[in-house]
Image (cartoon, rainbow, N blue to C red; front, side, top):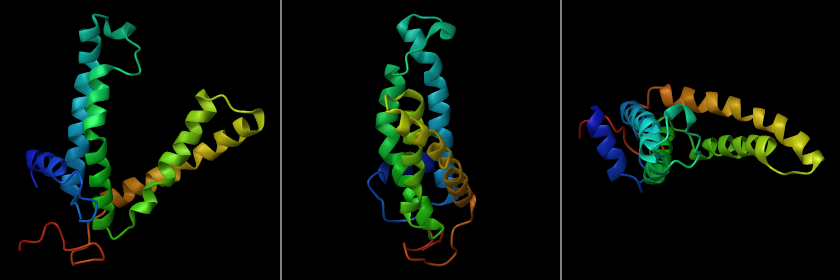
Length: 155
């Protein structure tokens, strides 16, 4: 699958959480979002009229709009990618939950006992991230699996 075909497919199938996505579809869409995020990182300060080095708005307007527009397609293509390697999408949920624990550890107002609990718990997100990246890099099942036919098969 080519770059623009993958991006188009991800936006067209943004509500499809049941099929399979090939490696190229997934990684081209990740590349697309990274490129646009990088560009927006420079455009947001220009629109605000602030030098890049001094801009520190964590809720930059263009970046937030892009995030909102691509969140569901990103989630959808990740679920379909996990389906392609015959994995349940439930494997991706510990990562954001544990990452939120890290967020609360660093920025949240928590009682002292919970504060000490959230820090080490957030470190558990790293193995899940490595596991998700490993599965997303794997070749999908050649034959039909529990989640449908091979997305690369010529039917």
